[in-house]
Length: 80
Image (cartoon, rainbow, N blue to C red):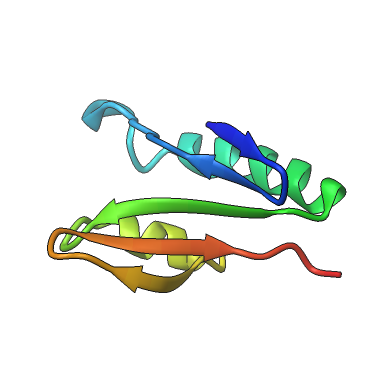
């Protein structure tokens, strides 16, 4: 994760297959989103097309804001 002046950018979030579907990713992301909310900044990330993680991020209110041949750019905006 890197912080830019108006946003955090999540470079990678990997959860081992045997650890998935246990809420670990949700806990990590909620901590990040709570921090971003308290600072009033956005969170951005890229997810590979056809990756089930896209649904995970959409459940957390990330919106697709762009796409390339292989990736979807997503953004979560802090509520003001």
